[in-house]
Length: 408
Image 1: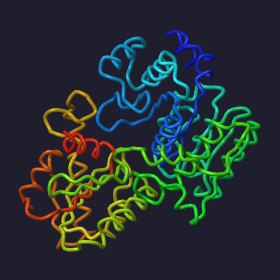
Image 2: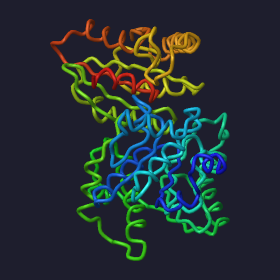
Image 3: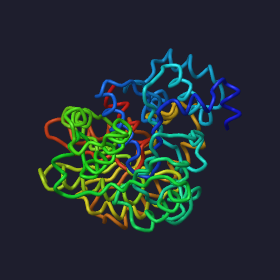
Image 4: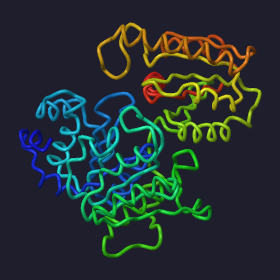
């Protein structure tokens, strides 16, 4: 991989001068990345942020000072390091950060960490590992220990490692073993209920407060390496309160439809999402119709997820593929794929057959061919006189399709 970078004029020494913060984990790595970026920017620093996946457009993955590259910028920089998108997008990000002379680069891994393309940097300022959960088990392994071993692969010699006490002990043991083998410094971020009022953020969900403390401690480390701060400064608080990270515990009103969107796709993230939905919409306004829109891809355990969702007061269930329209391709800027669309439709019918046994015969269940068809159905079926709650969960890609329609 280093030879590939050198081929395009990117030297490892240049990457090591980026003041890079490397982030892996299963849950919360995007939110923590965004929080770190906002805190650093609140200090007047120029930031570069690389995340995945995107919700609506590919260029969202690379941001300078919190804003995606313009279409022209993305095109120019990408063609500088022309290649297959999935493989070379991280090269584009590094190329952008070097050319834009950012003060700090926050880089999120894709899948795993040890063998992730971003794991080319040898001297990160901080290695951050967020909550570990079951995901991509066909690649990372079937146990939390195996997944943690892969995620902990971002730890470098003599680096500073940050993680939280929310990880179970077997996961922490794996991270600590890797830390010791690399002669690195281990920072375990603890959490108490009393800190809830300190680490405030405008992101929904109790878990985001814990993420906020993790992000704050990382920023304290990189900003005050030799002078640790004991209080959360106003600048830190400003950064946390201004953070924006769509598609995670996000609530949007569009006329009389109130959308609750979360791209949860692991057991832990579903648990967090369900608790948020129960708090936000489960107990208040019980008379309002509540519609569940669900999709699940990559062979994930849909039976487990749908069974968990029975805790919600659902009046109707709709399954639809991650396509805005069935004949135009989905939001990820790929060409239309009949095979992919047909596979997702088959999955949706499989979900429906299973759900009829889980939610009961009194709950209407249907399959729509696209996100647009789903939204049109909800509008026509429930009218515009009264509010209706729509829970969109199970896939970040599905959430991205909804956001593209809602926001445009």
